[in-house]
Length: 164
Length: 184
Image (cartoon, rainbow over all chains, first blue to last red; front, side, top):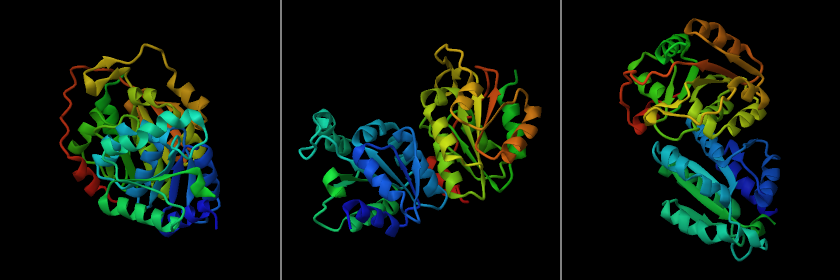
């Protein structure tokens, strides 16, 4: 089983019904696997803030939404995280590709990589780094469960290596 | 051009318990707690641009309910990309009602950037299959009925008069109250 398949299995086991996404190279690969799920609806959106609101809407309606975006997109989401997710205390689980860290071969992502974790901490976003040496599906289900139980956000950062 | 409140009165009278109402921040969200609304209401007090995608998430999850999302022209001007998302998702149970008065009403009545945006044309160009302008509150019954019958998502554009003297009540519900009361 590939890492991408393990992540999607984790989403399925966590009861996720709808995944809203803006792709990058890594998230696009993951979404290709999501599209093969029999229980998750994959929704392409035009902008990351939309993905957050769509996921929150799914949660409000009795489903379980998740957001798959790049870290650049997460950096776009400060307003909606504060004004929707935090203000209304809505569960919102994110899988975010951590572009620009030491594992990323693409040089122009580096500025995003330098600020991502510091931004997560400044925004007080609970988060974890995926570890493909461990059980990725379990890491996903734990993240979803944390979001549901805390009625707030949780961000699981992934690298391209985690999808292999 | 009609003021807002008669449009909102007409809309609320048309809603049923099987509908779901999502409101953007601003005057509509502030009026709704003071009105008898038969549909569940989720009203925003922040997050410009969130009402339509929030409504989309609800609509996709509950295809048995018709979701009406209220959005302002200032909010949509900030995030018009959502029209393409809605068109692509194709949910026939989502109707967006766009309130157009050319002003950021809740932040003090500042004017929007002065471009003469053709909202119905923008919605059509984004792929929304059912788009109509409703010029008067009396036309909302027919407009909403047609939107409900549409085979895809609908956008109704309501040109309303900007009235800086409108006596809009303050926000009277806390976000946690709104969320707790929202049950489908």
